[in-house]
Image (cartoon, rainbow, N blue to C red; front, top):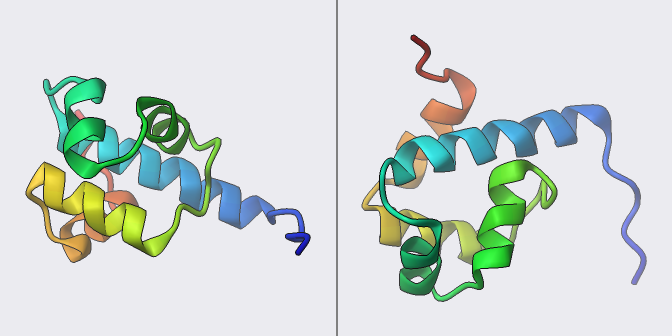
Length: 84
């Protein structure tokens, strides 16, 4: 199955998700969070940098569990980033 290329708005949402995950991770190491979520550190790095713009639902749920945030909180942070 060949996936169609992502649209610019999908790339933007992926970058916003990555920023929200980095914010939620705070001072915790990328390696620790990835291990707790059961994903590779490289996968988490790619999600956080927006290189994986549309991660699987179960990956996001695992990350939410590892970070102790509800999916709706993560979505809120992605849509309205905390600045300053």
